[in-house]
Length: 194
View (cartoon, rainbow, N blue to C red):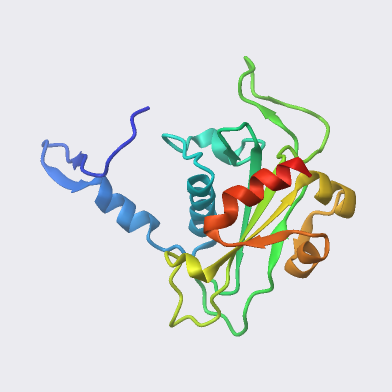
């Protein structure tokens, strides 16, 4: 696979350039308030912070056992939540993150397979919270509007067992460390040692 730079043309059947890949990205991925895009954006931010940006996000990443692999080999699961949503709201959303155990899918096997046991496959979880509560001030690109909570999977397993979701208050209660984007890498390395 080739990583696009955005300048690549999209051609019609007569060979005329009708747009660029950058045009497509702007059209399809500009709404960072959308749950799908915000989640992918959070994974990208964590990848940058951990110096772990892969050349291309592949289809298997959505089905993989974790979201980010650091240069040190630490497997990181990224979860995202926000008070504001893309749809009309009458009240702010409750902050809940998914932490369900899953099958591990094996993409290296000759056939698509997965383990029968349910587990959490990452070493560390990073919970990304877009903190803005005023729609007129929302700017997902401003990382001062984000908080990151870091905790080892071992602590989640010990404190929450097979629980499928967790609230922000519970994360804080079990010892998740709140950090800024700039401190995220250090926090992940420290959580890995827990």
